[in-house]
Amino acid sequence: MFMLQYVHMKRVIEVEGMCCKRCAERAEKKLLLLGGVSGAKANFKKGVIFVETELEDSALLQCVENAGFTVKEIRARKGLFG
Image (cartoon, rainbow, N blue to C red; front, side, top):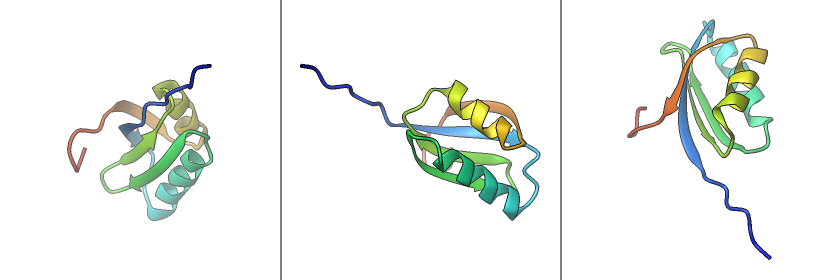
């Protein structure tokens, strides 16, 4: 018997179209509904979402775009502020 290991990754998603606090909250809620996302914090002023996840970037991209935003880039989070 073997156990699946999930890699917990910290990602930064750069987005367009997140213009207010309500938009940021919507993005966070949509991501947190995905199984495999343990944390999401959006900053609408900077146009970024910080995510802790086990999912592939393609799943994050689809979720954020389905929430109504345009994804510019998804990258590894380096350091405290991305």
